[in-house]
Amino acid sequence: MSRTATIARKTAETEIQLTLNLDGAGTAKIETGVGFFDHMLTLFAKHGLFDLEIAAKGDLHIDSHHTVEDVGICLGKALAQAVGDKRGLTRYGSMTLPMEESLVTSALDLSGRVKFIYRVEFPTEKIGQFDTELVEEFWQAVAANAQMNLHLVLHHGTNSHHISEGLFKATARALRQATTVDPRQTGVPSSKGTL
Image 1 (spheres, rainbow, N blue to C red):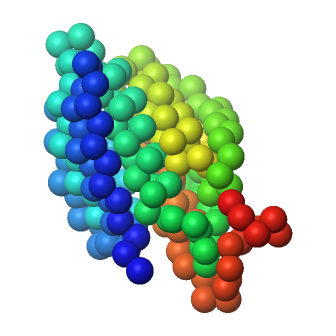
Image 2: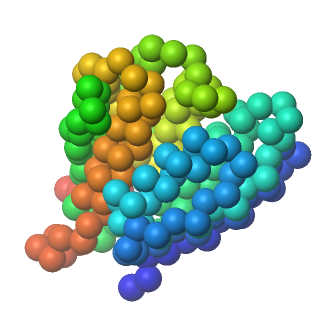
């Protein structure tokens, strides 16, 4: 069964084409016009072993907010589409990940219900030209559109780049775990019979 999705989104602010393969090799072709964001998405694909292609054009003359948020919307929709009815999935995933001096946890549930908890404070407002507040905007958009519970927690850290990188890598690995097909899970992983 193919676990892929292609999402197209066009608004007055952005135009995005995104393709996701959950059973990939971690290859990425990312062009959002936001260099640091491209770097984070490339790491996400690599650590999730997802093949991910994103071509995004946004109103970067204003700032990066619309582009980052709308890519999050598209990635969330792609995740929801690619997992289908979730039959056979592990469903839950978590990773506590060290990134140099930083330690983060990402824990998630592909529950079909949205809950986003973000306990992260960045020591700086910028990473280069990238606004650190957009990390929260991105993951909130992903969680809402993937219809999942997502908890992101910073335990400690002093370098904003490392904190952001830890969050993207940890969430990629948690999603890799949650989207893995468990051969012992013959149906939908819920006592309700549906997710």
